[in-house]
Length: 529
Image 1 (cartoon, one colour):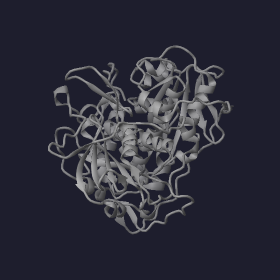
Image 2 (cartoon, helix red, strand yellow):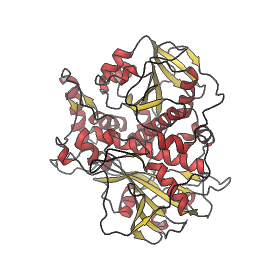
Image 3 (cartoon, helix red, strand yellow):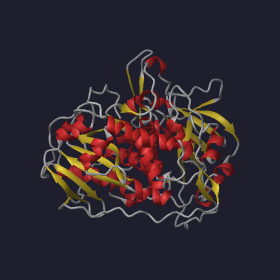
Image 4 (spheres, one colour):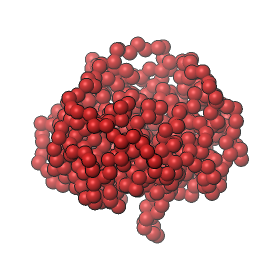
């Protein structure tokens, strides 16, 4: 996820035309394709080839879209200054996290909401001056284009009238969009409304897809969903640190939520929802009272310009009310791989950095130093990234770890086993040069101490959750990547997303077939600045 100019490379026409064929098959709505095939088509159409990303992108910075929505003339409410009277170390927030199963009928204060929104995706720093200020956010963004937007449906917030609001990040204000309680409309968009009925507020995350497609073409769709995972993970951990509950359902009626926000679901679409409030104690699992199924595939005509593909993908994977749909049995993915297990050190005294500090001070690494990581630091980052099952929203993402420089650990490619907290060696040897080649020649891929590849089990996930599963995998990868960022900050390290890899080459580097299993995200870690 870097905006750097890509180096000139040899054209691979075979790989390009294979992916182009997959994209055409998806856009034509091939009904005969199995769910796993359709998910693979979505993944292929967002791939990087040696010719670049598929799709249309703008060529001039003059056409760059603003990362803010202006809402001129709308009533604005200044949020209280952000205070953190109560906070937890990142390690404690991760280890104690549990999604709220229900909420008590209690309110949050406006100051608490202010704090939550700031640490979700507020402006945590500024670069430049005058008319060329870059507003740095709490969550990373591809090329600092910030496709993600944040809305709040407030129901029980002291000092704030019930209604719908847009979070204006630069001024730390709320823009009033709709007044009055929207609780009933929100609950009708969920399969299990009883679990969220008493939430004090619901934070809705959207993406303006063209902000990314203008530079990254179809690939921007991956970045947008991964960003929603980054932003949502900040929210989850900030809520846990403050001591209130959070829950984020995956099964949503997309069109109902889009209508609530007044967005079209194509140019801007809802990608995630997070309910927050006072968690109820020992609440029973809320039963589903309605079912959703995937919307019929849309077939709009081709539109020249900024590129329509990402919107088509989102349109095709919407959920709408439906009778229950039987899913095929999940396709088993082999989990036993050859290699020896390397136990990671048991957690001792974890870094004491608070969640809020790691969020506000997190930055993407500019460069890495050739200094080895301590094995204990790697173990801590892996534990924070994926070591606690309660953090998983969408199963189907594995962590592959490319080790370049770690004390007491041979260089090579490993797979992380969260339950055993160990690394399984897949291939030994110095992988820096081959990994750099698979990452468009970006030097950070080889100078970082470690690379964390998030691998999606595409076929298995599609069999379980249909075409929409690809959205879920990207959200999950973004959440894992954000915890790597925050753990790095807590441990005195730095991290950076390098998701602009060459898909076919990077999958081959990881030993994946690219169809049943494929790399969907990459974050690198090390000492640096």
